Length: 166
Figure 1 (cartoon, one colour):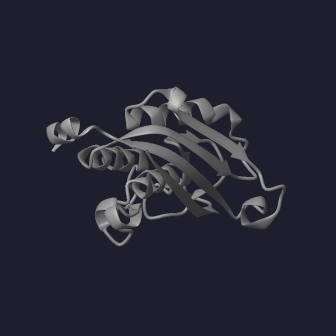
Figure 2 (cartoon, helix red, strand yellow):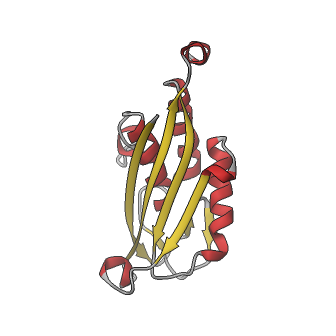
């Protein structure tokens, strides 16, 4: 078994959609980034890649590559999961936290969990997503941005399965 940790942060700006865990959340601002700037998905992907010692999302999906401009982060997550399987790993569980003063995210948590589970090919019971504020402290507390952290557990597949996947 291997453990990975991921973190991401993006600035909130007007004129962009707010997408977290593949959910389009109604809000006056969205996250600025080269892709759809889904900080939750980005933190999860970095945790998964880190657990397998396969780099990070910036290595796989460079922000200076026009192919990824406006990219759907859930589609990128699907590719990350494919890379994990190709390298002989399966996901045990994912635990993520979104840090945002606003908007309130509780109504969207179950859908975020389901989206991540579906993309990763795991059961929703293997995905935890939590949301918290920073009590109006720091850049997230002042509403300047949103961040997310994630940890995961991956397991090495038996050698026989690895051969079949490669």
